[in-house]
Length: 380
Image 1 (cartoon, rainbow, N blue to C red):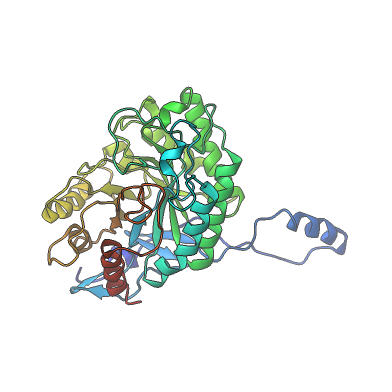
Image 2: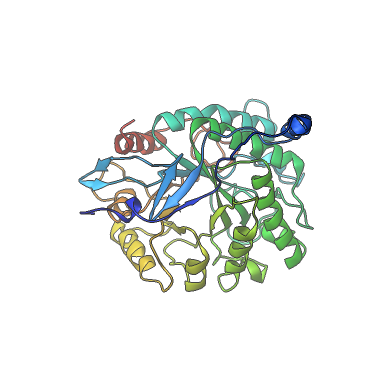
């Protein structure tokens, strides 16, 4: 990383620009005042991209920081927290996620406790987390049919208000804390609950419009989690998912649009059409046991036709070994890529961050090891 990084040069891609005000006749001040009542609140956190690095509020993330002799400026250290708005609409499986102290599942409690944990994540230097409108496997990993029904999206592609209400609270708290949210729309095992491709398109448009209309500027869109794994709808698979990326980019409010990409399964490299369409590349390290392979993945992604200076972000990796000199986290950073922690858990209200009921605190040796490393890198 000697010399000037491409994070320090090039145009900035923003999710929004500040409004410009000028004097107006008194006759229309009343109308402006009434219109202001319907405007989204002022936001504190805006994510942008310059070259291959991320900016928050116009400044490179981790500005000036190095770790093990390499710059970490422009990276987004992150964690997979996809069940922040989880609920199970299937009465036959809902009891699986019951809290041990009450004997029942409570989606509002889940989100309240998520919100309460967020400041501690930020104090340790974490700058981003992933949440998904269809969550992730509440078993950590799943094969075959997933009978639980965790979806903020109806069969026709509309957004369920109760899920979106919980998500809105998370986005607002993240905005207050200076956190970026990687917002996934679809998860394999739940996408088949949408009745057809038109519903998929409607859901993507609706999710993008919902974020834009509420004025959130701290959101990156992940169209679907691991597009090359088990999706029912053709438009969510690798050959066509770029169409949905382009749809998200086309949704605008004035000069504002959302930054967007999609992810691939562990060890896989994005295809050319996805690379050309995306603002950033999402990789996964699940199943990648050699840290050297993580570094290779970053280099391979940069060789895909259509690649230009753009951030590369691991937002799911279930390898830890933070006490060893070589691990997946360190390997990603050695190639200038961001890294994301995935701790699947065991539905025991203690371990992990994906299997409900989740303890969202930094409460186990594994969680503490991850956040200690983040704090070391971030200098918090």
